Amino acid sequence: MAFITLNSSTVVQPFGDLIFIKVTVPDDKTDGGLFLFRGTSEKPQIGVIAAIGPGRFRKNGSRQKVDVSVGDQVLYSKYMGTEIQLGAEEYILIAEKDVLAIVA
Image (cartoon, rainbow, N blue to C red; front, top):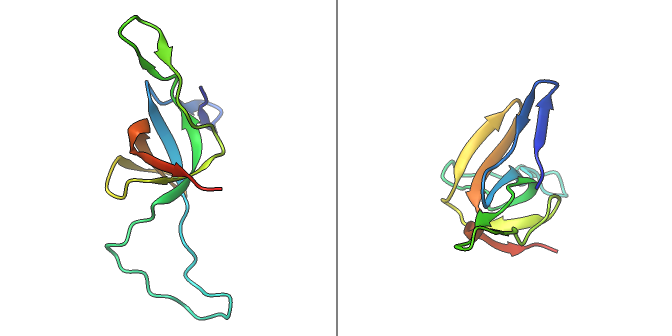
């Protein structure tokens, strides 16, 4: 279980099996210095896990821990979750089932 501290009085803690991901925005420029056009409909699918919930409850009342950890870079479903803007940072809040892979 992890949380994000935005300032001295604001803390974000996801519930259940929800995962808070900091969106990784792709570069708009190539190594050679050329600027790339990014279509407005193109959404990033890779991010770094910033906070995770404690896990969902099983039928017997115990918690099933989330399989990913804070700091993991993950690939997630393209149109899932809730987009959240906190200050200058862009995040997405998704369920654990919407994480497709850990990017090594």
